[in-house]
Length: 551
View (cartoon, rainbow, N blue to C red):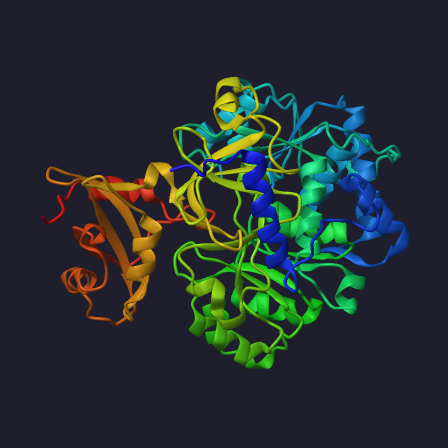
């Protein structure tokens, strides 16, 4: 049922509710004291103001703002000499490290287009992305050359910059000019390919800088933290847009420091947080539990970590874990969920800050995503008509704002389907509550229909996780001759638990509505994960389809 009011009236009411909800919790605006400028211009400004401040810290080296600005300007000169011009795509086929950041800044300095390429790609995946984006130059390193060489003749790539030429490239004469068009195509960030081959999302530097500023504004630090900017520890892959936001954009735009790890390592995280006075990081719930249980945990001072963010891919953040972390680290270190978002929106679209009192965020219907960052609008609409739905009703999440993609690269049909009247239709199911906060329930394609009733996998997963012997759950749909579809649950149990699938299914019968109860509960030692830590539900669906649920 639609609201029966115009979109303008609906949004006016919704924004008023959100403005009231922000008071005392979150800033009302997204602003930067230096105004709007490109990412390389922000780095150049900090190089002038704080030249010796660490900008990028890795195991291999530390780059001050002076060195970061200089190296990227020199690499830009090398790229220009090798024919790179504004609008040209440049592939950046690298893992986390300072070289990735220098490459990104050099490409943007020329007004060229940054194409981050997953360094875990194999030949078929790499061939697709290089042919789709069509970069003529790729920046990489020697250990990735074999897979690149396998496909290079089948792609437009004509020049490769690897280890042997890197020292000369960053010693080249500087390219002093900084391209200043905030709205020109600046990056092709590829989607995960959950519905066919990955598509390139066209993003601009305005999208990048708005996202970075919203992250900075949304933490409400004390004056000392404001003066030194965001100090972010990031082990998320920076070719992935969430890693780009937290590991590059937010710290560099704020004049802070990015501490980049190549992979998760609990001992290294403990050391790095204390050594560099890290103020924020994003990790899975499992990561935080591993830190708490680490034998060296008590020997490290983590009180600088005032904005620890969780990503609940498998296990969910709970009030008990939040309380345990706060007791161990200090009152100012409160675990909270990271934001809602997707590659198409530059992924940092909401803020949960201020909703932790009384665990309001964790006790709400799953999954609480908070308020939209200022300048961004959400609606929940009917999937078929596109009409706004009343608060509390479940429908499709649509979003518009300064970080939404311009279009899909070379995909006009996909663009027309997703971008309508200025709104991105996400295909995600959600609801808005009385304060205007967003709640996420899953992808439309993942929704399960049981005798015409909607079952949201996220909701069933959350309910199953309330069993004391359940560490994590993943729910998929299987066909059922009686009900049409039925939930099928895969569960990871507490080590040493004697829990069986039949035991948990019996518990579920007493704990949730009958149509939500999984037909089968299968206990697994581990859930299959993507390289970015998400559960491979396509793999689980294929496995579940081989077993018919109980009636």
